Length: 467
Image: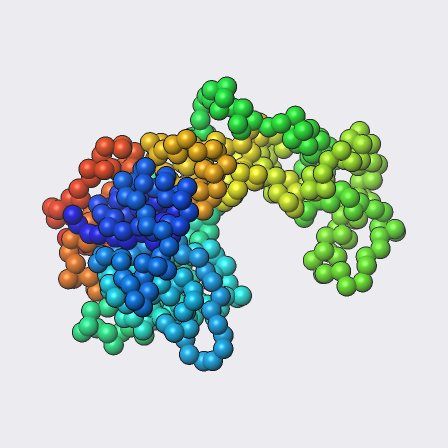
């Protein structure tokens, strides 16, 4: 055993997969959702505990000693009363339970994941509290957010064709003799070696995901479009083709198309107190309609002024650039309308109602394809649960390739602090460059032992390590 880890807010095990592919052994997992915990246990042979607040607090510490702590924690607002930052202020939030574990167990590495907004302007206070808490606990951490998306990581390093921006917080314990460096700023871990020179437009869903070539009748029935959905897309496909011909090579409008708000510019009335962003879109839609009124009226008449469509399907957003037509794009049915993108990479996985639609196949992504987008191997088993639950769990999961590369980059960055942990360091840096190599075979994954022979880490640019 090279190193141990605990997996907090574990979901269905994205962190577990990544650390297991490095030779880590999970000694504790927590997940309050019983359905997700059941899937976790089925695939990783570890039964997650339930409520972390009962397992880690002032009176109880049921989380065992470990080398690495990971978790995709929920971000809750911290109190802004008073000027004190740190442990006391986080009380009442789930981050406090994480901090309590770190305080007692002192793991060597801490890697936390959250939605991108955690590092946004609305959460500046929360971010500062987290940074201050980790530093006071004796960890090196960068104040600069580390935002990672799998679609920016090359496929040979475990990248995936999915836009999924997430913030990672990489904290490394500082040895006592170096504690004076705890409050010094440091650069975020560098993913340059695995992102350098990669153009996300080169992704090919058919090949890189890959898409499933054939589906059973039952499987197809779960993901194929309904007749009603096909009618929505067919109508807007006609719109795209008509406008492409009309514009003669010029790009289609990039702003949201709101058919319900098409009026002649001379008749446009914008109510007072209308937000500026909405006012701008109303003006653009009016100008667009006025410029192409004859052809748009003919199109609307053919489709009964879209009155048979729900309001959200009378709105459309073209982000597919020079893609030939709508049926050749990747689509999302969103509350804000039908959004079309180039058929290279897909938007972040969310609930089933917004699962990406592959236009050429006239169906949504399957559960297996969604699992592949997150880096889960094809042997990953969702047992007998319904697809809706599986989509939800995958939408909440952490991307395996992103975790794998961030943790490796963290060790590279903080190699000066890790001389006392050679097995941990060698396991992480000596693992294959792509987690898929270990994950692809079920038996191999569960028996994988890191290479203990001296290794050279060469793929990180100028850095050359011999371990």
